[in-house]
Image 1 (spheres, rainbow, N blue to C red):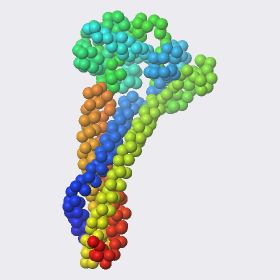
Image 2: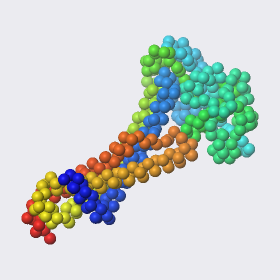
Image 3: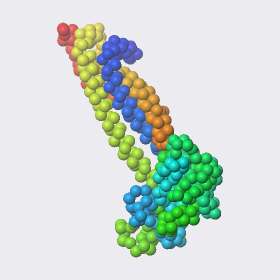
Image 4: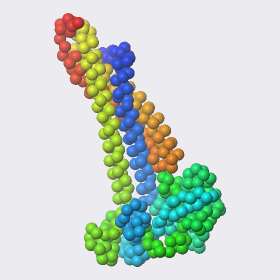
Length: 403
């Protein structure tokens, strides 16, 4: 009997093609939006998890307060004296300051403004570990590389930084000084990081002598069995006293790698939640449309309901027919919505990658696909429950006399 009810419901959906199609359309729009948005959210979460696994949670960052990217606000810097002091704090395995400044890069009369970073060549391994990136071509900087630079990944590509790509061994001008390119970093996934220029300390200090011993931010690695959160509190407390600053008015802050990732995760969740709520509005409209469709179906088939009841159909049979019909409309809309969402997300991921945001890639776990279809089914079924209940309560005599 249940199979007969399902078959009967399918026939009724098929019989009213235009009305069913419009109802399905309203449902699939909402499901498409939700599926696409969540897939990007899951993809970003996977990216964060990979970064966390590669970098480890034993890293901390000391940054100066200010406006813009670390080190770009001239009023707030981490001094060499601060680093020397922090290095003596118990629980620190390794520490390294990073110079950070906007530089002019020129090639064949093309001028670009990008970020330049000065790194300690004796601590290259630690820097690469913290940044979760290594040299893709060529070699890394080493002590004595005064007129040499390592570039971000995008310099290897045409029409990214310059019209023509930069090759290993090629000469480029940076702040009117000529440098040899000795390597390229791996792709990080966003245009800003992939356009960076990296120097040794000595080179950076020669370009910006006024900024010597004034760092944009500092990377710290905790010793084994040392809680990074507790170490961050210890560094904050001791460095604040060393600088003679009041609590809450420090010109710096210390953040664990885990905290930074959690902040990023929270931003992702908030943005995804807002976007999904907006998409849910279309599903609410779709549920109202489904309810209206089913009420119309009940009115049109009143006499048919009377006949079914006259030959022995029970109230729950009538109820099941209309709930199944509305559920079928939802499931079809959900299935098509998932397919469209997949196509939109995949296309969006490719566009993002071409634009340099390769970290912005969607993910399609099986639970998302099945969950979206089931969600659409239950939205449809729930929307049709009131009309179905009304249909089940019709009296056979009244239904048969309905014109």
